[in-house]
Image (cartoon, rainbow, N blue to C red; front, side, top):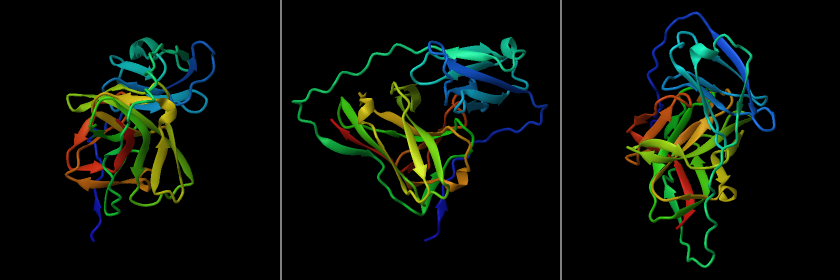
Length: 270
């Protein structure tokens, strides 16, 4: 069977400009400890990155003086700055303060919960899709419908059309509410990570420690949080099973590709 590749390609204009790399560091406003994996990006633009293990980042801010730079991570209140106000402060340390969130109530134990798999269970090796860049902050995902509210998410699964060819990488799993057919607000209150190792053909993440309860259809994505070679990570996909939704960086606009659906699904109870 002829191999069909459904690569998520977002059209990005390329301009040759003088590099204006801005470096900085982000720490916890209460503990002063560095914050790894914070999303840093120009609001509404395909310019962004993610802090490294030491909370450090580097981003090109050339020709963005009139734009806004946003720093955000689940569990913390986001901060937004006008680029013109901070461009003269390279190396500056920014802080994020933990946000106060209301946790979901613990499930009632005597409820007769019904277990179900929601989403696309394809394990296709011939039809697939991938990230469009290997840059930190790149996300790809799909919308999953529920059968009844409330629905408790127990496990996330993503099928790889071919075994991973790199030693190891870390992805972040994100769950969003849906508004006007696109991802809207983050649902979880903690970072959820997935480790992908060489030879692995299925990504499985236990969601029970995060107590994620949804009331309606939701969007689930995988996000690069470290530089990687995207050509080595392909997800199973299938035609006429939803749309692929992606964005280049954490603060960019979402782009919908209505060709096929990713092999993303969740084990759930309702």
